[in-house]
Length: 470
Image (cartoon, rainbow, N blue to C red; front, top):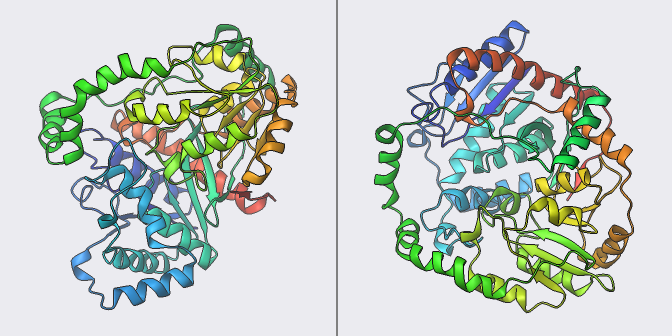
């Protein structure tokens, strides 16, 4: 089997990720041991000096000259059934120097000329053919080249596979088809996980209100080698200058103005809960269509709430600066919507709710653990795997979906089975480049990851499954 790995452009394999090249090399070696071959494609020079793998493709834009780019772009969009702007938007909202960290929008000038993307697409198309790739793989990064890979694989009937930390910090392998359609790979990766262990996990979580997962250890970085260069780059970008200048206002906004719009939390009222997602993360910009504007979705929910119900919303405690005072002001005007303080523990909010609304947040999994049903608005790791999770892809159906939600009883046995399946089928190997702690650690993780990757590919090739349709 031939696998092509599209690597992330931002990873340098140096200061904050010195052992990531060891990991990629380890995967290459393990694949060869098992009779397969993997190639790596790099769309930036960040890893050129540190790459240890031998089967590499490095994109060199100066060697590709294309004329009539608009005509070629239109032809490619029609042939592959996608748009370059759709592919580029999630990438740019993460890194653009014009990005306002409080908005999901970018200025028009970012998309006025996308001609530089054409050679990237054609290069990737050529590499997929040249490497005879059966499978194209990448991580959860929302980079434009990865969306190109999905479009090309769909057209050429090749498997496009990703891995993301979607289940309580654990990695999930999933195959993507048309935009918004995907299916998870659920092979048994952890045979030692038993049903009694799954039950203990659920019961302990509920009893002790503990965190659903712990943060992974990372490679330590120094002030001189890591933070100082980042600080020097900090002031090159206007949004960071703006952030620095308005920081005093943001502090006052959070401590004074926002509190004026917070409601008292009342657990006795029948309510549904919706926690704000970070506006610029891929959950919204890539996976959140057609509900990218949360304010609009909240307004839609408020108009069709079941009789007697309220919608409780709140900012994420770690992302409060991403939600301006004006945002809360608009929400405050909506009927039967209550803005509760972020200091209220999420365990309290979930346990007293009658149901949870989410795109693909961890709160959806935690709600199920507490015995609360979920309605989701994006592809995630609970819809289709737990009987008490619904999905809304059409707002004309929203009222009926909410009525069904508040009348859904979560059976604990269903939750036990769901957790058991997921704990057995998810990976403990994070592809976050900073989590590879040493050469030996990278080698060990590469051995495990390679087997998990191949098991997931085999599962998707041999198991009948339904696509998740967004």
